[in-house]
Image (cartoon, rainbow, N blue to C red; front, side, top):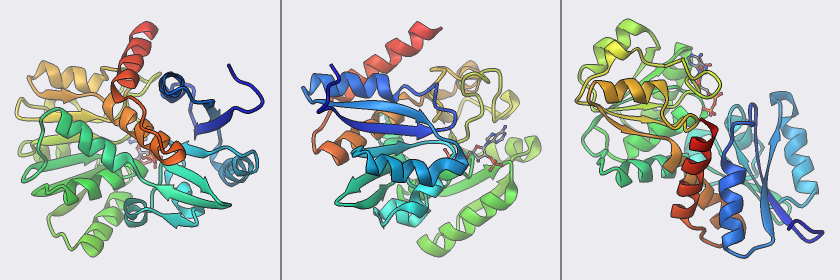
Length: 287
Ligand code: ATR
């Protein structure tokens, strides 16, 4: 039960109503026996700074940050962990002794999700759709995990070009390429790709009929990982399955980011399995 001593971890984004974080994290926080709860707030882009300062003033322990605030979250931080610093994108802010410490745990979540599905990134040809906060971070993470090349697609090509130039400069990689998100380019490049990751919000509830990659670009030699977890099976994953590709949903990545948020804010490790199970139950209940 929430009482006057209850502490909070919050999740902020816009939209936020689809977020599973409060439901799954609260299940884990309860199971740990803590008097800490997770709460979601819709925060508009223009209100981000005020919201973060306000959360700090309210004694909120930390903020999990989602679309569209990940880059602003890195900018507002006093200190950044290595991946947040490298990518200029943070998805977790921890308030520590009056300072804001920004973390990027998306890379960790994605790496672990691929590993859990038995996929080794080392030596693989990878394509990522989306060069926003998440896409940029996954591009860096896949290069660090040993991908033999990364093709980064984005609707706004300039953003992909910028990330690729940064990856080349900061990581000294040459085998990273930017593309505009266009049908022909996708079709041509994906022929030789082994791992495809959707790091855009395309296909997310309530736009479940949308897909970032047309079905005729998919093939059975692909592992398709969608970071969108609501719906559990996005149109992209459904069409990938239909052509015989291996598919990985976004639930594990979400759960790993929740695990890290609790570890950072409370120094406690919550149950991964309990959160994953709770998330799947909740998503199925909504169908
Ligand atoms: P996040 O920090 O979670 O990555 P973001 O920085 O707002 O969120 O990035 C969202 C990503 O989804 C971007 O790559 C965006 O493309 P643009 O950079 O061109 O805006 C992509 N995206 C969102 N809606 C899209 C759509 N309808 N079609 C294609 N890409 C889309």
